Image (cartoon, helix red, strand yellow):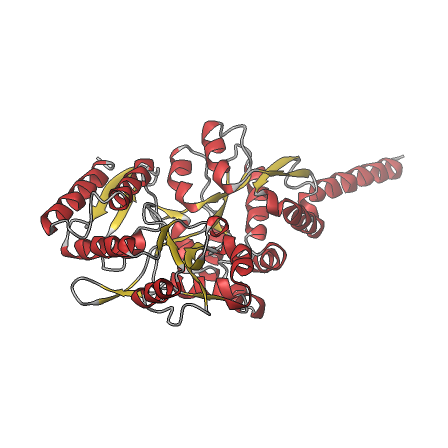
Length: 406
């Protein structure tokens, strides 16, 4: 009888042990939001991950199509009802941290994230010195696309405009955009950045547009606007009679159709300022990030962190590039032959060396920058404006920007 009882107890203990091992992280559901273009890709990667990690078998993972542009707003509106893991644009990170919608990156993953991704993407994923997200891409920037049968020297803005004017062709750039506009101001050495605390609240504005450097940048934008070849815009699909356009990787296929065999890419050109000095155009660099929502259940949080780290890993980033064309932030993936052979990504990679990672900016900044550009477009600020008038406009812009952080 004792032997039989012992055998029964042994079987029960073995079943409990096996069950415990298979479900050491418990059971539950994990919801992931990604852009529609990568839903199928993400489903396959999650399936591969779960198959390789039976410890997480108690979890059901659902992937839903919510783009990076909508994810942050949806999460902030309803953190509890939002996704457990979600991709978002880096300019939304301060709002997400402030709303309590982002968990800090798991300590065991922090060193890997920082060492394996480029510095710009790591900076974009950091708020107040704390790493809050996993970098996914370094492909949200702008550079020059051009028709090489028209543009003979893509390194000089003056030469590009001269070639376009001579051929009766158009040069496109969006000067009434706070994103593209910085290409000139950052080129001359101006600062426009905001500091935040650990909660994502703006604490200080660093703005030096009302300066000799800002005056040079503003005059260059005015000079560009005065060219008969210039057209305000950045959407290749809407460009007509175009020989050059400042745009991003998202429009590469459209530009290839536009220019055909004459398709070419390069970093942004330099320009000669009103002070006679030469300046390399700069601007913002942008990134896609992957965030994890805070969880009450620590075991579920561990599962979410593990999935997020996998989806942001170098191998998966390279697979994502090969399947949907997203440019990786992972250094090893960037060095692959396939990525290096991509003309648009190569041009962007060269340009990113001269750009500033886009940090956190108040929503009102973008409307203010549009207003500054519009004042040039409608000739309120022009080549006939005095330096005093131009400096007054820059001072007003600067004061308003600083006021957003007070």
